Length: 310
Length: 322
Image 1 (tube, rainbow over the protein chains, first blue to last red):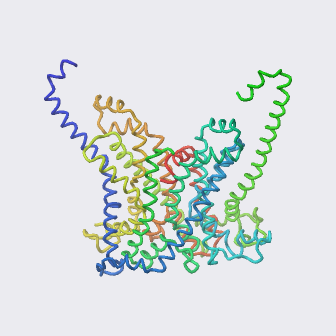
Image 2 (cartoon, each protein chain N blue to C red):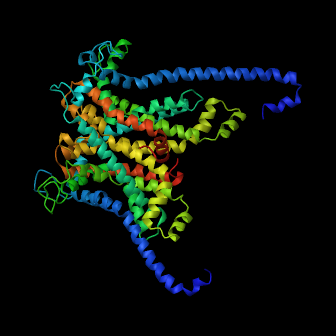
């Protein structure tokens, strides 16, 4: 072997270049299905979206004039859109902290030496596994003003005197949607917090105990800081999902009453597929993009800092 | 350690007594805390599971009993008629849904296709990015990563238009005009989801840990690149493939927005779409809707119970949903 290397160097080198090229070819072949689909449905679509946002583009009309920045200017003056931004922030601002807090509390309970931990964990994860439209339909049923369980038990315990309208009440509709979303999201938060809790080294608690820290102090000064990466990750990801809330709105309220639950994505959906204003809807989508982008960049930085396994 | 230290200095009889007292008190406190914990956890769990119990219970009741107050948690007149009506078995009435069996087949076909295409395409690309060196690799990889930042809604409308104007499909000419392209078709449901930047990223991270020596040894033995990928890399990536595959399946099964936009024919509805549109059309048929909801949930529960460990692993490794 050692003797043959110098002799065959030039020929071997040529062969290696050829082989490298062949091997490179196969590498390109490997990424090509992904690249083609991405090129079409992401890169081209993105460019096309940019183009669309400068046009008045309707699926039903042949005439699709260039309108410059008019779509973007319209957005700034569009009261309904402003309403939808406020609604989306309302939804996100309430549902994300609630989901995380309750998810953490349940995770803390399940992290104790209790029986049937796996059973409880599955139970709280059940709403995540259930198709989301089913949870939404079910909660719509529970909120029903005439025969829903919410009204029945609230009336029975005399917490209310007359049935609430829930989803048709303009001040109650959004809180009702938020409550349902918190319910369906707790399982994910619980699971990630549970994984985070189990990753905290036992010695930290032992050390804190030796130093005379009580249960609350151990929680405050050991658990909370140790869970910070999990919390940050959950926070960012939940905010990104919440800003894109759509399905529960479609199923439960249809954006009503009086547009109190029309969120940004629901408004984009209406603009594009009910009013057929594709250009305007795409411009709206870029607005949403800008908001989500802030959090996504943050998320990617988290990935880089903590790796894939938080 | 801290407890045993004073014992050495004191005579055993003196040291043991307060120690036993302290230990007993500790045990009592611990027991009290555990009882308090159950007192909180059990009612909370009951409250949490109640909606599902109500769902199942309602699905087994005749319509009249659903509206009865006080609520019947255990049906007085249990019946499977709602399931029969929903599935189109036996006697039909005006509220029966059509094509329900097809919805399930459609969902299964679409979710399985998306899952297997994604696993194949994602892992192919992930292998190239993780273990191959070729000009432009890093640039292309960064490009893929960058697309993870784009929310679906931005590309939703143009993707819809691309699908609609797909040349030579659905009555379109070569310029993509005149027909409806891939709208209202399996192609439209499956292909836009057949690759995922997140999946590629996730699998690549996993494949990076495969030792290069293993691949080099196979290369020296004359294995082709595809064979290396298929026979060495894929088997070693199994845990990651299982985790992403199951999450992709579940995500695809319950996807609602995309089918809502592109599907118009009832025989092409997926389960979530069919169920939701059925609710929109039959606002008062809660009996049948509840039966349909139970049926739509069962496959997910089944998958979850079967693959619970993979799912939990996948979620805790890679975030909430694929």
